[in-house]
Amino acid sequence: MHPSIYRASRTVLIALLLQGLVTACDATAPVDPKSSDGLAPSDASLTVAASGVSAAVVSWSEIDISWAGSPSASGYQVFRSTNGPTGTYVLIATTGATARSYPNTGLTGSTQYCYEVRSFKNAGKNINYSAYTGPVCATTLSPPVVAPSETDAVPEAYRIQVRWKDNSSDEDGFHIERAAVAAGPWVQSVDAPANATSAYVYATTEQQACFRVIAFNAIGQSAPSSPDCTTLPAGPSNLSATALDLQSITLTWTDNTAVEDGYKVSRIEEGGVWSDIATLPPNAVSYRDVGVRSDIAYTYRVQAIKDGGYSNGSNDAIGIISTTAPKAPTNAQVWYYLDTEGYGWNYLTIYWSDASANEDGFRVEYSADGLSGWSLYATADADAYYVQQQISVFDPPPPGGCYRVISFNVMGSSNPSNIACAEPGVVPTDLVATAIDQQSIDLTWTDNASLEKAYVVIRSTAIDGEYSVVADNLPANATSYHDTGLASGQEYWYLVAAIYPDFSWGDWSNYASATTGAGAALQSSRTVVIERGHNARPIRIKGVPRRVPPTARMSRRTP
Image (cartoon, rainbow, N blue to C red; front, side):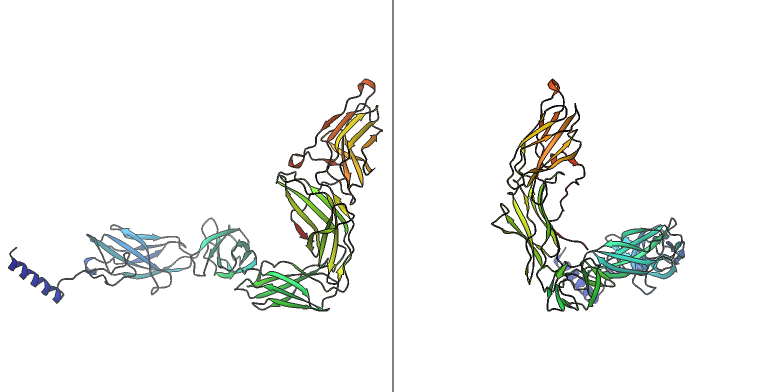
């Protein structure tokens, strides 16, 4: 191109731009919130709008939208509003050029829906949109089952109970839907059977949860009930109960929730039932219980309340106004329980009976010989009745020794309980059974115990049979027993164990057997080493229950 012609062309182009006769790309073009690409059409006249839009109700869950269409359109967009003809419209479908209708399904019965339609035309890289046609509105038919009502969400400890009124007689069940806010979005949570009026849903503390209920049958489902929202409050912690004077006990706790309507304080006496004694305002962290009696143990519990429901309870706390020292515990016992289930743990457990109602707690003391050198072994809360040591089956047993229990309060300590002893892992060994004649068998064994008060002998006619006690008053340090009055020609199996001062039995010896007879018919003794731990044979003893330890390290009596 000649330079003079180029300069002339450039001058004309600049002039046209200045006069607005040529449109440049504008990154700030107006935005159309209904457009699928967010941009307003560059020239709406390039497309022909759908005309004659109509909405036909088909059922309680479907409305069909139809329009006349345009032969020059590349397709159509259908928009819907659920809050009236002037509400917010959302794109719900894009169709092809030949489409003249769209079935809108999955709707809610007895609900109004409004629609607008526009066409679009693809022009190279550009999309041109027509103006909107409509709105047109229609209301779905009544649903096939009547909707529930009066939805009520109530916290209950670690879950929420959703309640409702069942207004139908032909439902197959109910869908309970859940959302973070009352406006949704909603997701299916749980189902409930026909005629149900409540269901439980697990929840996270301090997070709002909203619920609505939908009845359904084989034909379809109802409209949803009105939603109801609640928040499961976090329970209080660190509850303590302290005697303030001779007439009152002060409770304090930690407030862990920001959503509570208040707090509920509950109390129980020994042998009684729980009762609510106070309702407190939000953010309360203390309460004074007046009018209580002295030397009585009161157990307290605190819960946050919300929307007619409640949180998990706090720890239990025992408060006592003591005027005298407590009584001594009784019936102390110690058991070393071997794992027979293969869980990997053995247990040393010291039990006792609580004979007092005003203790603040218990001290468990240990002595190697039960005579002197007593030292603190463990402590336990008021109303506890055992302490327990958990020991791996791969570790050696704890040392043998004796235990006693002492209760205490602010006024002093009780006398010690009886003494209970155990020697874990110490068993009689080398048990031998020898037939003497047609009616007698002699037993001998090695005494390895040092704390026993007696020995017990049990007998059965089969190694895995039921055993009976044949002697339980053999003296300490006994090493033999003469068993007589037996049947001739019968094999008998024996086990021997030490008896300790609390009358508990130690671990069993090896098995030994012999068969009664005469002369050359006498059978020599047979012995079987007893298996320990979870491989041990279950020993069934007539009239003696199997020992099963508690599963917790420490426990209080449950009211």
